[in-house]
Image 1 (cartoon, rainbow, N blue to C red):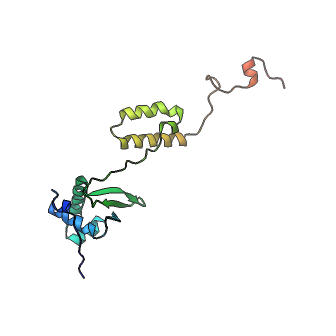
Image 2: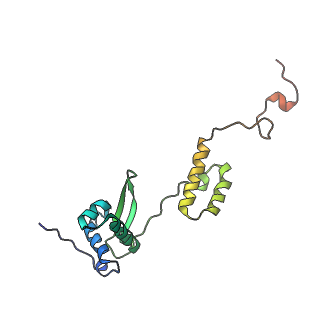
Image 3: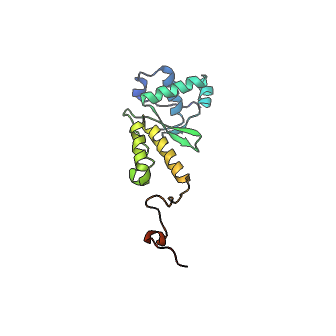
Length: 166
């Protein structure tokens, strides 16, 4: 029995390539408007459509650029998941939550964090660099301040100027 798929008019009238429309149709057979999430394996799609893996990757990028396919993350840090967009309205892509807020950053790292913010080209670089800074801060063993520095904890007899009596 042959499977039939209903294709929204805005997909048919879109300016994407015919191959990208064909990929969208293939993907619509494994998802639905009520369950738009899917795991996309370029190798499988390449075999199904008789195209190369590289062509499928290019078509995926074309669908993403057109807003008809949205990358939603990974399952088990390995499999890419996508959301197939069925409606004509562009999806509202939720931004990922920041790894930490300024209040969660230790006070001694706030100045460095602000400097990283000013130097970073984009959010991903900022997040990566601040995560690395926090990781290094957590891994660094806490050492007491040397006794000759201000703020160091000194024995009571040193601060009073008298020698200890044992």
